[in-house]
Length: 466
Image (cartoon, rainbow, N blue to C red):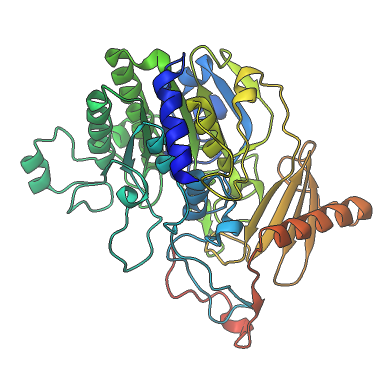
């Protein structure tokens, strides 16, 4: 079947009337829903992404498939729910040996039998480029990385980089103008765009910013220190510098795309892998806020999974419009194949969960008849313990697995999830719980189990935090 897919895809690119578009996916790391100016930040400056949104579609109900990074990245690569992949935590995860539940024996890497979007596009004649963070390899195994999953080329931070800063020797040896790794990765992305002459390209630019450690470019940190407003929601100058470096990078890539003459035939998507990190081990860290959403990365609430998303495709997307249609990172797999005119069914990757959102590109009011699901049978330093959740229309139900507690919110009226309506709407609660459990069975989701070593006094002990 895969060889048949390759033959069909190649024929479509060779004989199709319309040239296949280039595709760029910009993925921020830990950027919350309000982390851009066009999504409401009162401090961060993102003129390039704001401009992109003014030309395309801004998705205000966009979601990551998980509250932490690796599962979301796997969902992008495969179009499948993390629960179906059994890749449900950041790699290699964390454990709480004395917590109330024991986490399942989950899959700590992206299995090679899964066909990635890079492999599917490559089979269709695309040149596939990875830049930045991967975070999908099995620990302590060789023959991995992006090039083992369909990417023709991959660039990461230079050896010797500590946090975001490249050491002086590498700066000198490589002839770099900046010691900030985001700038280096941007150089590599631009070089690869310039090298992509004969075939359409797929560029997956997976940023490290603004993930911890919180380290900004010194000139940008100094700039934002002069602009801090202590009454603002966002007021960390170093974090603001990281977001600014992200935006500057996107701007440079878009400029290079214009200069190459490829911009008019390129689909561009920007999003984040999960919400912004707001607390660790019950302590607010002060880095950022996702308000008006509740909480952030690692949590069971909207702040952990609702993310900014922008799409721009000349000739397809409308200009400067907003879509309230809920979308998720599982959707990019089929969307990119649809854009490329390639088969998007299960002939090359079984059980794809996502949908093509190109109809929403064309008509922002277009709705997709489905519910969305999350399953996180783990503990996280920023979180609330193992949970599953469902969004159905404007209703959101959360089931916590330590004690079976249920929380029901109408996020259309209560975006901050401040009022638990589980007791007020027993029929809605029961219906959503039944739907959630039916979905878990359909994907064979792994569940946590009672921990025989449960020790309330040491339940939050974590050998290693992230």
